[in-house]
Image (cartoon, rainbow, N blue to C red; front, side, top):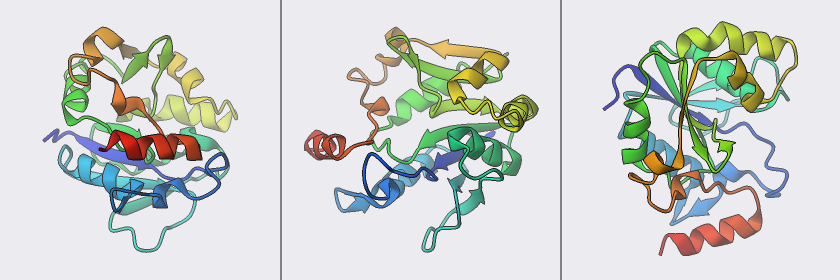
Length: 194
C-alpha cells in the first residue's frame, strides 16, 4: 500500500472517438471504471474519481472539474485540490491493464521530484503518473492561462521520466499503457484478456 498517495481516476472525458461513455464499457463483465478502481484500491488507501458532473452509482468520492471542457488538466487540478495526501497517482479510466508492480516502481522514483511520468517511446504518459500535491499552483496557473496540454504542463514541473527499459521490468509488453479510445481498441482489449 502506498500510504502517502491518493489514486485519482480520470473519468470526465467526452469519449467522442469511442462513441459512448468509456467508463461504462464492459470488459470481462465489469466496467472499465470498476476495473481501474479495483486495481487502485489494492495500491492506495483512497480513491477519487474525476468527473465532468457527478456520476450516479459510483461508490467512490468524486471531484468535478472547476473549469468544464478543459480536458485532463482540469481533472488533475481538481484531484490535487481535493486530495489530503502529499501525492496523487493519476490514471485514466480507460487503462484497464495497469500493472500494480509498475505503479510500485514509479512510486519508488518520487524523491526530489514533483512528478514521475512514464515515457513510452518518445511519448510521456501523464495519465499513468505520480504528481506531488505542491505542483498544484503551477498546474492551476496553466489551467487559468488556458494552456490545457497536460504534456505541456509537465515542462513547468521537476519531472522524473521513467523510460521503457525500467518499465519493461514490471510490464514486459507495456500493456499498462494500452488505453481504449476507439471501438477497435476496445475489441483488441477483449482479446488481450484471454
